[in-house]
Image (cartoon, rainbow, N blue to C red):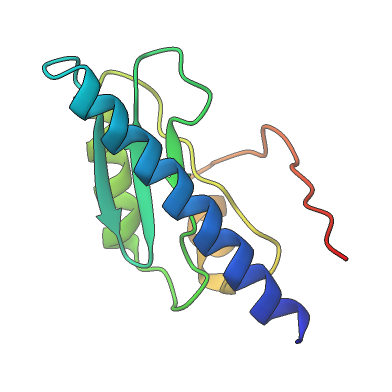
Length: 116
């Protein structure tokens, strides 16, 4: 399996895990404001103001990213009164990095996944 295919699978699993977690929280805590939104091939998740998983996961792994997709992400997080955060896999479509750079986004952290 090549690196990009592996990265796509790992990002898809991470996205699914985070969406499933937020959906479970929403079921257990109705009215708490937990939310998900599919954006392109990724998903934005929100599960409380201080949650470390509040961000877009998996975007740009299967298709190019459009400015409208970033607009959707920003609107999703603005509706929850928090700053937009977007995971950027180094193997994502280059359009994601280009659009984030154009908008002035900066890298906040690096996350490594090891696989054998």
